[in-house]
Length: 325
Ligand SMILES: [Zn+2]
Image 1 (cartoon, rainbow, N blue to C red):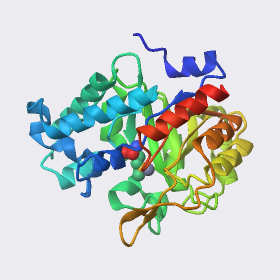
Image 2: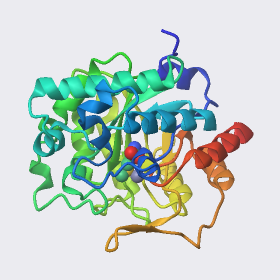
Image 3: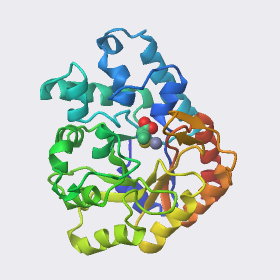
Image 4: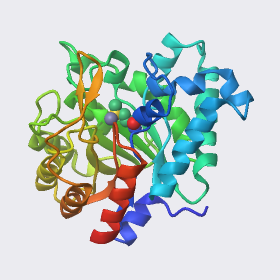
């Protein structure tokens, strides 16, 4: 295999910082794919013509998006599978059986690998439990979040991704609730057999969306001690406020000084949940150059962008990573 396993890559060169791609769902939307539906950015992959017709318009859009992120300097990219859990897909699309679902995931990973080539690292993206009920930004998982069977929810996607050699890393993204974090971290290497990271959905005031402090998050990890799954490679934040993200990452670093971190915030625009539109943020405090410098100072090893970030953002991130490493 041409690619160095990520665990080794991060350990061998303690200064190496990998540039991640940008916000794929919103970027597909920018490029004309209508993603407003229950499976969000999974939608182009649901129609058979995406697979049968190599000149399909959506196929071209997705290929071009990957190309543009690569040209901007992305070294590690994600599959577009944020809202592709078996529950979301089987309840909202004609794909109903586990066999058909496995076929869908395998096709998406194959296609993504073909788009990025053999050299780049590929992340199997896994959205949070909250994504299928749209509460990843409130963290409100109902009155008994401790009783949610998170494993049952994630299992079909995990089983498929675990056995796919084309994926280098699994990414649990936008995790807003401490019970979900605890559940993921309770799974051993027989359940999570590939390297993985967890991206937290953090409020601009610096707490997990459900109110847990970063010290509280750190305690869960410290309490696991050496029982922690050896495949747990990085912890970080995603889909968080651009302005607050350096401070949030720093607080995570203070609480867990030896943990490799990752950060991929939003563009700086702000989502108006009532009007369902993105508003420009006239108070954008910093440039990517400044925030990337701060992330690296706080132990970030993977840096990219989440919602509304484009190849232009990735280009700026890439330049800053080169400058500060
Ligand atoms: Zn996002």
